[in-house]
Length: 58
Image (cartoon, rainbow, N blue to C red; front, side, top):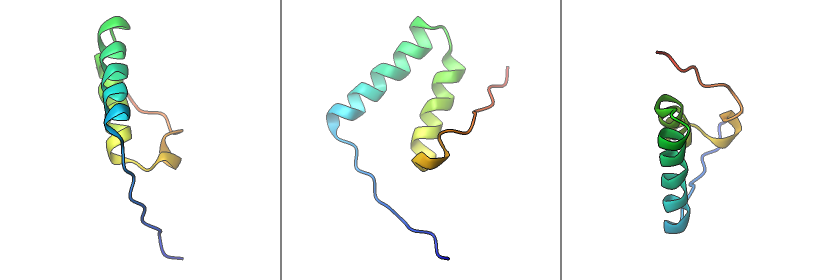
């Protein structure tokens, strides 16, 4: 079965909110590695893979 390709468009408002979320996780929660991992997941993986855990290395 062939993989389906989808184009996901993110609005300017959604982009701003994602940036705020990443900043909050990094600064307020003091978890910059987790924030970068989340950002990587959002940018490089389709949503159905987001449930997998992201390994955070020290």
